[in-house]
Image (cartoon, rainbow, N blue to C red; front, side, top):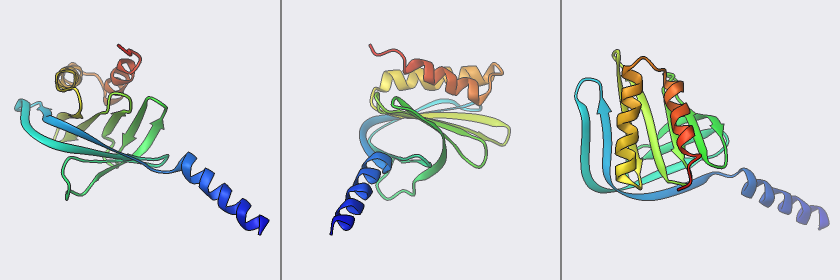
Length: 153
Protein backbone atom coordinates (compact mmCIF):
# COMPACT_ATOMS: atom_id res chain seq x y z
CA UNK A 1 0.00 0.00 0.00
CA UNK A 2 2.84 2.39 0.86
CA UNK A 3 4.52 1.64 -2.48
CA UNK A 4 1.34 2.45 -4.38
CA UNK A 5 0.87 5.69 -2.46
CA UNK A 6 4.51 6.65 -3.04
CA UNK A 7 4.23 5.87 -6.76
CA UNK A 8 1.07 7.96 -7.10
CA UNK A 9 2.73 10.86 -5.26
CA UNK A 10 5.78 10.73 -7.53
CA UNK A 11 3.56 10.61 -10.63
CA UNK A 12 1.53 13.59 -9.41
CA UNK A 13 4.63 15.68 -8.65
CA UNK A 14 6.18 14.76 -12.00
CA UNK A 15 3.00 15.68 -13.85
CA UNK A 16 2.71 19.02 -12.07
CA UNK A 17 6.38 19.83 -12.63
CA UNK A 18 6.80 18.66 -16.21
CA UNK A 19 3.22 18.69 -17.44
CA UNK A 20 1.80 20.47 -20.39
CA UNK A 21 0.51 23.99 -19.85
CA UNK A 22 -2.34 25.45 -21.91
CA UNK A 23 -3.23 29.13 -21.94
CA UNK A 24 -6.20 30.77 -23.63
CA UNK A 25 -5.84 34.48 -24.35
CA UNK A 26 -8.57 36.75 -25.70
CA UNK A 27 -7.43 39.01 -28.51
CA UNK A 28 -9.12 41.55 -30.75
CA UNK A 29 -6.63 42.10 -33.59
CA UNK A 30 -4.37 39.71 -35.51
CA UNK A 31 -1.23 41.20 -37.05
CA UNK A 32 0.86 39.87 -39.90
CA UNK A 33 3.51 41.56 -41.97
CA UNK A 34 4.84 40.21 -45.26
CA UNK A 35 7.72 41.49 -47.35
CA UNK A 36 5.41 41.65 -50.35
CA UNK A 37 2.22 43.19 -48.89
CA UNK A 38 3.33 44.96 -45.71
CA UNK A 39 1.25 45.02 -42.52
CA UNK A 40 -2.18 43.41 -42.36
CA UNK A 41 -4.43 44.08 -39.35
CA UNK A 42 -7.44 41.82 -38.97
CA UNK A 43 -9.80 43.21 -36.35
CA UNK A 44 -11.95 40.46 -34.90
CA UNK A 45 -12.30 38.80 -31.53
CA UNK A 46 -10.43 35.52 -31.25
CA UNK A 47 -9.02 33.17 -28.65
CA UNK A 48 -5.31 32.43 -28.90
CA UNK A 49 -4.61 28.97 -27.52
CA UNK A 50 -0.99 28.26 -26.64
CA UNK A 51 0.09 24.87 -25.31
CA UNK A 52 3.65 24.15 -24.25
CA UNK A 53 5.78 21.70 -22.31
CA UNK A 54 9.45 20.76 -22.44
CA UNK A 55 9.17 19.34 -25.97
CA UNK A 56 6.48 21.17 -27.96
CA UNK A 57 5.06 24.65 -28.41
CA UNK A 58 1.68 24.73 -30.17
CA UNK A 59 -0.72 27.51 -31.05
CA UNK A 60 -3.99 28.21 -32.80
CA UNK A 61 -6.27 31.21 -33.15
CA UNK A 62 -9.52 29.40 -33.89
CA UNK A 63 -11.47 26.82 -31.91
CA UNK A 64 -11.56 24.09 -34.56
CA UNK A 65 -8.24 24.92 -36.19
CA UNK A 66 -5.42 22.38 -36.11
CA UNK A 67 -2.64 23.61 -33.86
CA UNK A 68 0.64 24.66 -35.46
CA UNK A 69 3.45 22.75 -33.75
CA UNK A 70 7.03 23.80 -33.03
CA UNK A 71 9.74 21.89 -31.16
CA UNK A 72 10.89 23.75 -28.06
CA UNK A 73 14.36 25.19 -28.62
CA UNK A 74 14.47 26.94 -25.23
CA UNK A 75 12.09 27.38 -22.31
CA UNK A 76 12.46 29.73 -19.34
CA UNK A 77 10.11 31.19 -16.73
CA UNK A 78 9.51 34.19 -19.00
CA UNK A 79 9.34 32.75 -22.52
CA UNK A 80 9.29 29.72 -24.80
CA UNK A 81 11.12 29.59 -28.13
CA UNK A 82 9.98 27.11 -30.77
CA UNK A 83 11.51 25.94 -34.04
CA UNK A 84 9.83 23.92 -36.78
CA UNK A 85 11.13 21.53 -39.44
CA UNK A 86 11.51 24.41 -41.93
CA UNK A 87 13.88 26.19 -39.48
CA UNK A 88 11.33 28.92 -38.74
CA UNK A 89 11.04 30.28 -35.20
CA UNK A 90 8.20 31.14 -32.86
CA UNK A 91 8.25 32.96 -29.53
CA UNK A 92 5.76 32.98 -26.66
CA UNK A 93 6.06 35.67 -23.97
CA UNK A 94 4.50 33.94 -20.96
CA UNK A 95 4.00 37.05 -18.82
CA UNK A 96 2.63 39.36 -21.52
CA UNK A 97 0.64 36.53 -23.14
CA UNK A 98 1.91 37.35 -26.63
CA UNK A 99 2.79 34.88 -29.38
CA UNK A 100 4.97 35.69 -32.40
CA UNK A 101 6.26 33.68 -35.31
CA UNK A 102 8.45 34.08 -38.37
CA UNK A 103 7.82 32.23 -41.62
CA UNK A 104 10.23 32.09 -44.54
CA UNK A 105 8.50 30.82 -47.67
CA UNK A 106 9.36 31.26 -51.35
CA UNK A 107 12.27 33.61 -50.54
CA UNK A 108 10.06 35.97 -48.51
CA UNK A 109 9.57 36.54 -44.82
CA UNK A 110 6.33 36.93 -42.95
CA UNK A 111 6.03 37.89 -39.29
CA UNK A 112 2.90 37.61 -37.18
CA UNK A 113 1.76 38.34 -33.65
CA UNK A 114 -1.25 37.46 -31.51
CA UNK A 115 -2.42 37.90 -27.93
CA UNK A 116 -3.07 40.71 -25.50
CA UNK A 117 -1.74 44.23 -26.03
CA UNK A 118 -2.53 45.10 -29.66
CA UNK A 119 -0.36 48.23 -29.88
CA UNK A 120 2.71 46.46 -28.54
CA UNK A 121 2.18 43.43 -30.79
CA UNK A 122 1.81 45.64 -33.86
CA UNK A 123 5.07 47.47 -33.09
CA UNK A 124 6.90 44.19 -32.47
CA UNK A 125 5.67 42.61 -35.72
CA UNK A 126 6.81 45.68 -37.70
CA UNK A 127 10.19 45.74 -35.91
CA UNK A 128 10.68 42.03 -36.61
CA UNK A 129 10.09 42.58 -40.34
CA UNK A 130 12.36 45.63 -40.40
CA UNK A 131 15.17 43.59 -38.84
CA UNK A 132 14.73 40.77 -41.37
CA UNK A 133 14.66 43.20 -44.31
CA UNK A 134 17.90 44.73 -43.01
CA UNK A 135 19.66 41.37 -43.19
CA UNK A 136 19.25 40.18 -39.61
CA UNK A 137 18.62 36.47 -39.05
CA UNK A 138 15.60 34.86 -37.43
CA UNK A 139 17.79 34.21 -34.37
CA UNK A 140 18.57 37.95 -34.16
CA UNK A 141 14.85 38.71 -34.20
CA UNK A 142 14.19 36.16 -31.45
CA UNK A 143 17.01 37.73 -29.43
CA UNK A 144 15.24 41.10 -29.79
CA UNK A 145 12.02 39.55 -28.44
CA UNK A 146 13.94 38.02 -25.54
CA UNK A 147 15.31 41.47 -24.67
CA UNK A 148 11.76 42.80 -24.53
CA UNK A 149 10.88 40.30 -21.78
CA UNK A 150 13.42 41.99 -19.49
CA UNK A 151 11.30 45.13 -19.23
CA UNK A 152 8.54 44.68 -16.68
CA UNK A 153 6.89 48.08 -16.92
